Structures are given as C-alpha cells and as structure tokens.
Amino acid sequence: MAIKWMETTPSMDIPDREVLTVAEVASLLRIGRNLAYEMIAAGRLPHVRIGHRIVVPRQQLMNWLEAECRSSDDPMIEVDSAQPKALEH
Image (cartoon, rainbow, N blue to C red; front, side, top):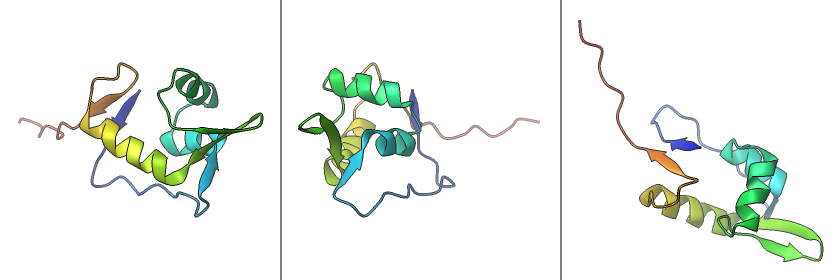
C-alpha cells in the first residue's frame, strides 16, 4: 500500500464524530476493509474495542497517519514523497 501525498489531492472528508467505524477508516485510507481489520489485529492501526465492536478514534487516526508519513519503517506502509519527474524532450 502506498500513501501518496500530492498538492492536487483533495482532502479527506472525515466525519465530525469522535470515533469512526472500521469501514469508514478503510474508505478514508482507500484500503479494503479486510486489510484494515488485519492491521488492527497486528496492532498497526489505532483502535478501541467496545464489547464486540471496534472503533477508531478520529484524532488517534490522524496522529497515526501523520506519524506513519514521517516513518517508513512499517513494511505495510510505503510513503512515496518523490516529486513527479518532468518529461524530457
């Protein structure tokens, strides 16, 4: 999975609620729901269990995402910060 940040990329529409469902997080990160659950099971994605339900605190998700963008040590996350190369004529 590659997280690519480009100035032309529209910002994520994150709901105003304090917690997000796993499906919402998967949609925001543009990954599959199964991968989101795998990352949670591996302890790679912040989450809270409330009974049988798993939710992701919005602020923890944003903090995690910022930290992951600064670090490329996680093999599940590849951060591509390279600028697009100009075409040569």
